[in-house]
Image (cartoon, rainbow, N blue to C red):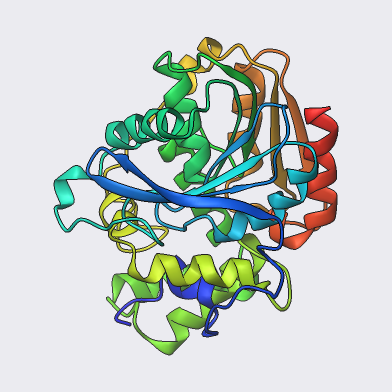
Length: 311
């Protein structure tokens, strides 16, 4: 690769393969028509309680890294889907269709296709942005509760936090990274090693990283949605989402809300505190020794936290 991006960091140079039995509870899967093409969905579990509809990150990471949430399917259906432009969904080549608004409309299309009149909405990373945008547009009819993880209400705020974390890297690593960027040496082994160190500190601290996480890394490698909506790498956010901002609109969300983050999350604590203050009555939970992928680093604790909130 010409540059070491988040996609490379997530894959850690290992081919992705899901753990045996990961889909043991699967009941149904299929495809749904959405604006721009079709997406792939999977429904795990059953029951009469409102389903948990999950919105993955990236954009372009796909559903895979969220699979630990299938443990909640003993209590209610859990719905996973790959958003347009990644994973098992269509990936139309027309870059103009990859917009925030189309993604919002996609959520409604998925709900309509699957008959999801009442849901609990879960969004992680980019998925948290999508959930916030969806609700701020007044689309929340039938949404009983909201869960936001690795969450942000402002891309400029989140990117500023990433820059602070880079500046704090050990042994002057952040300054060296910026020097290499200025010299257009992002493809150098030194830059790649420093970027990988950042991701091991702030994206996924699990060693080795679990297969679901690696599968999402493989999705990002080929995702047109990531390239168009985010940009060439995690720190150079020049895509569609670069100026997205909803901090002043969080008061429009009036749902029981759980906000989760890791102690070392690349989406820094100030981003989560902003959402916590903005959504009245929300709960903020910080997972010790975790970073961005809390559901992959401490899956049992993470699922237990969601289970308590859902109860």
